[in-house]
Amino acid sequence: MTISSEFPLVSVVLPAYRLGESIGPNMVAVAEALPGAQIVVVDDGSDDDTYENALQGAAGMKRALVIRHEQNRGKGAALQTGTAAAEGSTVVFLDGDLDLPPAQLPGLLSFFADRDADVLVGAKQERMSDGRYPWKRRALSRLFSLVTRVFFRLPVDETQTGLKIFRRAVLEEVFADVQVTGYAFDLELLVRAHRAGFRIIQVPVDLRVGASSQPLRLSTLWEMGSDTLRIWLWSVRRGVK
Image 1 (cartoon, rainbow, N blue to C red):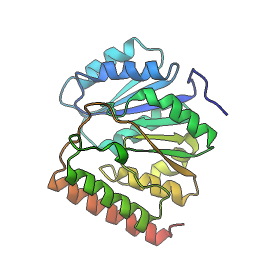
Image 2: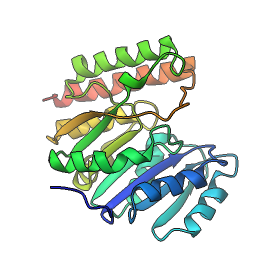
Image 3: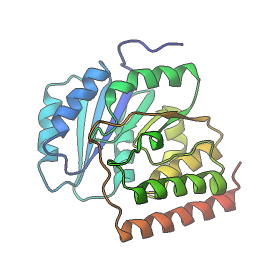
């Protein structure tokens, strides 16, 4: 099976926070990469002009929707809101800053269809080179990958990369039960999808030239650790396949 050059059955959900200067051009870049696809932007309570610029960007598009959270609720909550508004039978999660270029989406969608997968997870560790990602961030990523494999028995090494593709049926079955809205949101979603029997595959993805990583604060590390523990306790109670 191959994917057409038009993508009317695809919805792309872009969580956005403080992207006032870039969100409009980023929406255009996604629309150019996936003609005919629906674009859903969720402004997660930004305190700049992200929402206004996203509305301007949507005004020139046939299938674009902009939603705003009045308060910052976390990436997971933004993706839940966007998914509820998505119309496509295939739903793409893509970070709104486009550190993961949308030009690679047609090829990934084709691979996703050819492999008859339920979930495709982007993996960027191979692209996390010196100068863009500090060694502490790369070490943390590898540690989290080990936790993913050992404690959750997921068939993927990475869970946090901001590019994922889902069959709508996956999200309809498991999304409502996801409790975490912060850093470990992706992990819980994938653990629940795997526990439900959906087929998950991992594919290397490209990073934008000049992409950089924001330093992790101690509060973020604490949140990540406590949320990961919560997910693990849930998986133990339910039994991980």
